Image 1 (cartoon, rainbow, N blue to C red):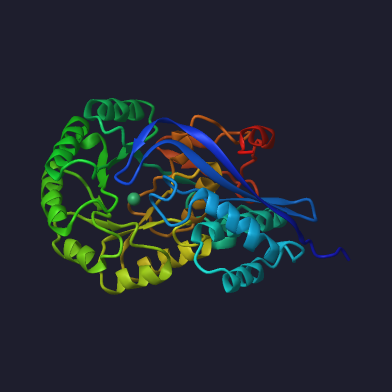
Image 2: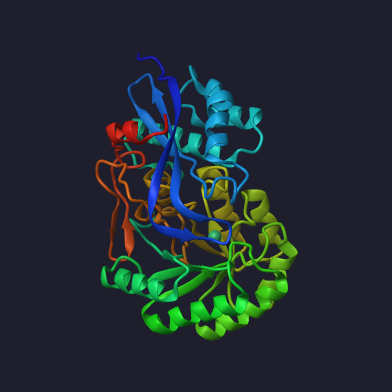
Length: 374
Ligand SMILES: [Mg+2]
């Protein structure tokens, strides 16, 4: 009888990768992304990968790339090393019992452990979360140059390439009227060939949001994502009850407890499900389950992760019965450097899911070794 495989090492890598263009959000302008990658090595030779990437250092969330690495290396890795690699839920229960918060760090660890376990069992990661109902996921692209003509040209190129026909516009840096005019010009140029949505990333007050929502609805925009500050769930409910344009909760959802609160008060029409924000794949599955039970529509969100977090999200989202608002798993396409031996397959407006075990990707470890921070 072979002995139970155990976890030999947990390693955290920071990898700084330039973006293809400045990515302007209301909270930060990104010229590079810092990928936070976790590698779990097991005694049976199997390794698993996870990702805890966030946006703009500490501008978006309360975990930074550096804090994630420090907390995994100092507090989480010692809870795992030497322990049974196959009993993933037990490993995660121990981490949950010893570590408060740190949703992104926990997500990366959970992803890496399940990736290793799925590889061990010889099945795609999606099989550990109920199995797939789809083999590809429609992918929205974010237009965030801030320049109207440049954004229209970028959208036209994506339509020509048949890569994206759903566009999310990042707004909130300028005044409401100026933003609405920018979005309306883009929607007018694209017409019925594309869906146009906006994300204000919490930039507006409730009154600004009501004003903006009317202008955006008139322009033919399909939905508004997180217009107001994350903690104001009553304000979000006011916007949803106004019934001007569908409202999506994003930053308001830090896992199942928030999801329950927003669902119980019907404070949003759509949930942006994110694995990192939910504290992991299981947390994100619970957020989706709460939404489905409350008849709230689903959207597969991103933290602009690289290939590892993107594929982890895709594996989970492929199991959702309903995904009415598609996904935005374009993170790797925003980066100038490839970290996989074979890049992810984006074609026909969708990300194609691999059928190989685990995450279904192979990292270029030699490349990562050169690119990682010393
Ligand atoms: Mg968002």
